[in-house]
Image (cartoon, rainbow, N blue to C red; front, side, top):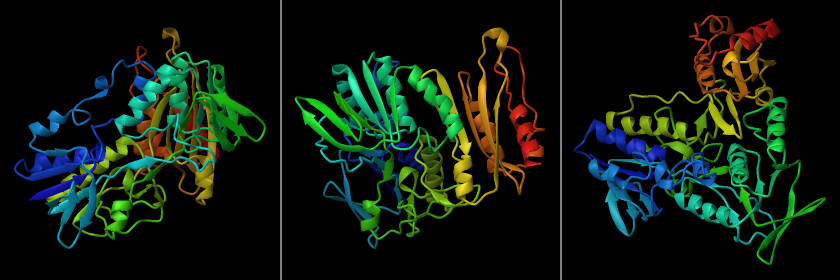
Length: 442
């Protein structure tokens, strides 16, 4: 069989690897218009902050290593843009060459959104995507300058703010239209994080919009309604939009979110074409509503499913996502899963929440407290969301709650699940807020 994969991000790379594992004699062509293989945007701040000294230290396996493909006899076509999909002939046009396929996988990714602000001219204005060129360009700017405005309140914007302060930046402004981490945190949990951001030296400006931007003498002037900021450069962390133009031109159906519509096997409206990663329309498990979910872990799962289904004939279903997430902002780890209470209510759920600050974890070993917010649904008495902030590791608890939400486990059953314990390692305090949520639900 012949397979074509468009995109070398996590979804495309994992799909190629799965196809090769299932049939190492098959013909696989992977295309990317980029000059080199990349890494997820969430890994780039490691180099930008100086925590990792070289970009090459992020490369592993399919990320950044062209020999990975060569050893597996996968034809990698970098700097080669696919300009057309000819569905009746089952072929793609790439670099003026025609490549036929039995199955095609679209791993087109997503592109950063830059708001339509008057005065933007492309000079000293930066974003991040999975394209390593974005990271290298931003790194050169960071090394040259000492002041910046960051636009956006999502995790990439906050991670860049932390990276700049770790580089000794004199002024870092964070401009947020509504609130920070709005997709992952409710207001009271966001307040805790805002304190950390301000204490770390970032000048946080909330509920603001940029009227216009002016470039004068190599500096950027950001004009707000009540003040003007003068800095060296602007970074936009204002979200991503799926790359769907190639699919649209090929006549593939788009979903209500604007991403490529897929079924549970990740097939598009053309059964011979699959889509995976940031370009596909996802759905959440709790209510089944459609959504975008742009995270590397999601792309890896999608690539695995699409690759294997393309070879084996739709044996694996994609069940959706419960949106598990974790990051580190300055010294704090922030984790969430499921709905915020705000989103749950917007979707018509009878949501109930509790907030709990636990006692010190591993106190005798210098452990730190944790702040929990749990959201339950009154009718089913099940967990539908959780948020955790701590200087301790939170990912294990987030993953445990993700399994519970995905399985729609009743709280009474979840609270009785055994947890490991040792005084020498992190103690999981989740039972305390779980019991509080059960009391609140009645």
